[in-house]
Structures are given as structure tokens and as C-alpha cells.
Amino acid sequence: MPKVITIDPGRSKCGLVLAEIDEKKVYKAIVLKSKLLENYVRNLTTAEDISQIIIGNGTYSREIKEKLYFFKKEIVTFEEKNTTYRAKARYFELFPISGLKFLMPREVFILNKNLDAISALLILEDFCKKKFTLNKNMDFKTWLK
Image (cartoon, rainbow, N blue to C red; front, side, top):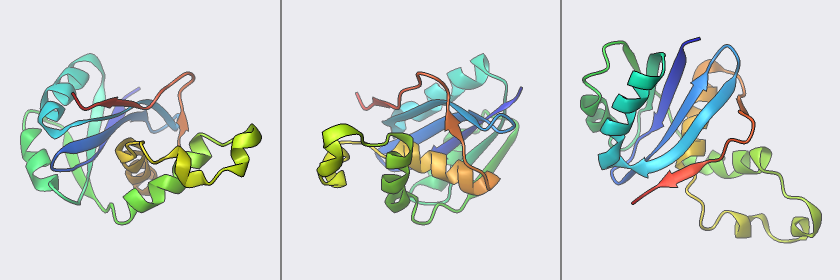
């Protein structure tokens, strides 16, 4: 089945999600430096059947879209207002706090997290108007090297 890529663009880093819309499943979710995005998407489109790329319309979106000139299928720009703010709440839906940690302030658990991948997930969910689940054993990765 064809998959979609959703990107939360930024000047220094981007969130990226690879998902299958019909199954409502996320297969990859990463945060990577913006300068690595073009090669990563190029490799991903070679390995996967990607039908569409959805890019948030925020900071640096035009430049990101220009970098993806090689993708000959549909590239859509979509509203991303408040996704970074909303990503904090969605983080706890995806990764609920359990045990005694529940007594600690929630903010402690996300201080060092890069939420750009979750912001990309929210852009996808807003675009499709449905919630997605994570593929089994999937981990949100960060590639900022």
C-alpha cells in the first residue's frame, strides 16, 4: 500500500513521519537536521512506495519544498498552527506515564525531547482528520549529528 511522508519543517531541524493512511499506522518518526532531509527523503522514496508528501506551512516550508524537487508525485502544504504546542499533550497520549512517575510533573519527562516528529504526526492527523497509531516496537528517533 502506498505511504505518505509528513514533514514539520524548520531551519535547523525537521520532524518526519512515514505512515500508511488506510491502516492509520506510523512506521517511522524521526527528527533530523534540515540539511540531511533531502537525502533521507530521496532514499526513503526509493525504498518505499510513497504517494504523497505533506509539508507543514510554517518556518522554512518553501525552502524544504524546493529541496524535494526530485519527488514527481504530489507535494501538499498544510496548516501546522500550534502543532509544536499540541505535541506535548500528544506525547503523553503516545507514551503514557505509569507507576510512581505519575506523581512527578509531566514537564520533567519532555524537557530534552525533540517533539518535531510528533508535530509532523499532528500535521498528518489534522490533514487526514483521524488519529494514527504507532507500529509495534517503533521508536521516535533523533538524528541531529
